[in-house]
Image (cartoon, rainbow, N blue to C red; front, side, top):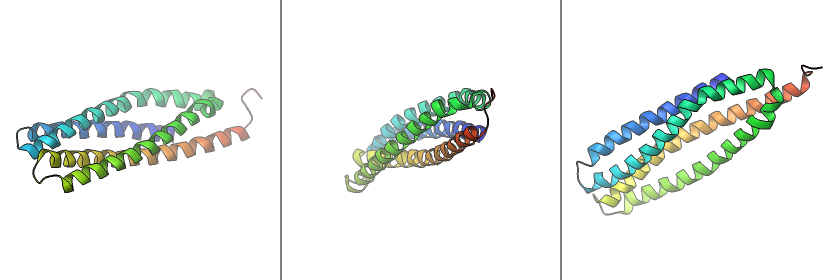
Length: 169
C-alpha cells in the first residue's frame, strides 16, 4: 500500500504538471484573440502556475517520502503512528478545506460565465475560473480518495503492529 500511494501521488503530480502546461498553451492562444479569451487566458495562466508548482512538489517529494515511510514501517513502526498518521490527518483536513474553496470558486466562475456580458473579458474570467477550478477539483477529489485509503491502511497497520510483539521482546 505504501508504494501504491506514493506512486499514485507522483503520477498525480505529473498530471498537475501536464494540465498546467496545457493551460499555459491555451492561455498563450487566448491572448491572441478577443476580450473573452483574454479574460480566460489570465485565469488559466495563473492557475497553471499553481498547478505546475504543486505538481513539481509532488513529483520530487514522493520518492523520498516513499523511502522514509517504508523504512519506518520496517524499522520503527511506532513512528508511523507518531509521524505519518498525524501528517495524513492534516492532509485530509487540508483537502476538506480546499475542496470547499474550490466548489465556491467554481460557483463564482459559473456565475460570471452565465451573468457577465456576453463575449466580454468578465465572461472569459468566468470561463477560466470554471475550467481551471473544475479540473483542480476533480484532481483534488481523486487525491483525497487516495489519501483516505492510505490513512485507513496506516490505521490498520498501527493496530496490527500493536498486536505483534516488539523486536526487542
